[in-house]
Image 1 (tube, rainbow, N blue to C red):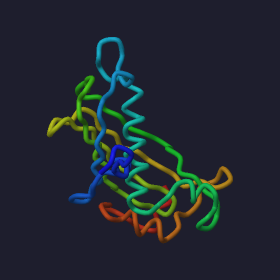
Image 2: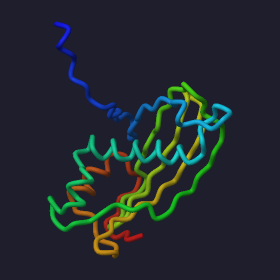
Image 3: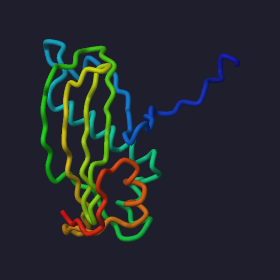
Length: 161
């Protein structure tokens, strides 16, 4: 390899294991408060990135859905979250965000997300997401439902949430 050549760079996408998606995140200075502990709102950013990369790995592209490239234009919105901050993450920690589909309804997706440092659980969230078009709930396309059921314990098509 010459000085002008460089390996292709690709973002960290994470991996699927045992019904969950695992996404790595390094804690940077910008993620922390004055004490070197991750600022609470940044946990939400970390889990959002993990959800987005999980969808991307499943070949579900939010920009295509938003633009209507695969049918009706729709978006995913977070309708509700239950959060538990258990232990602090700190600058330079290497974290893993574990995302597990729990329930795939007709228009909703329910996910469990954990932030781990090694085997230690730092943060847990139950995230409720709705598919929305023109301000109203919309059924998830069958193709998206199929892809999301890789780890869901319950995927009843009658659930509208």
